[in-house]
Image 1 (spheres, helix red, strand yellow):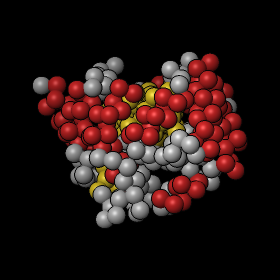
Image 2 (image 1 turned 90 degrees about the vertical axis):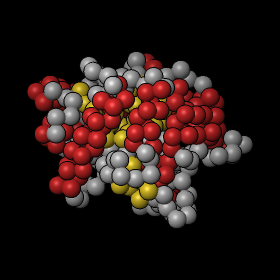
Image 3 (image 1 turned 30 degrees about the vertical axis):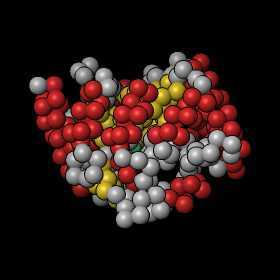
Image 4 (image 1 turned 90 degrees about the horizontal axis):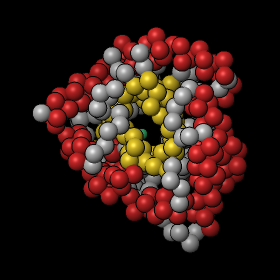
Length: 281
Ligand code: MG
């Protein structure tokens, strides 16, 4: 496969991301797949789905876990509902994440990812130790499957993320870097953050956003890639300097406006193609 194949965040049922047909129509060769619903994660469906992907010429690079009951409505809601941090749902979601990893294995995918949730900034917080333990458990499960686990960035500062990964202490734990999330959550200037954690980045989202008036207290606003505060060219140049060689996966979450979503993803594809030419010379 060529260096930096373009990708898009996609789904096959009601998950986040565009439909496969959209990826195909835009000529996009790779996807991050939002894990399908539990009832569709069967070996038969994996077979059928793989046949469809082969026909469309699309490769999955990462499978993303997501859980029922998660809401990204605002920052306090994310804190309360997302990932493996909320204690009430942790055991069940940990189990489900392992099942998602097993389904990814059926699809021949060697990386799974998730928003682990708001990791406490203070390592003395008992919640911090609990989240370290479940991350170890999932990493060990993935390891048996020959897989890596990628943590989506945004909900914590780069410093907390690095400390957390060191404390988990597993050699298959890496980062999915989403520069827009750093802005949306107000957790750090994205290019500076990428330079700090870059040695652990194994997948990325090409997503953009503009800063909120009060970062960290209210959401920034997601905008099409290349039109926000990320600085798309600096983002790709930094990846180049880091020696990153994975896919460039466009994420644009406006599922209620599929026409606009497709058009904006198409624009992002053209922008990335131009920037790749410029960077590779
Ligand atoms: Mg993302």
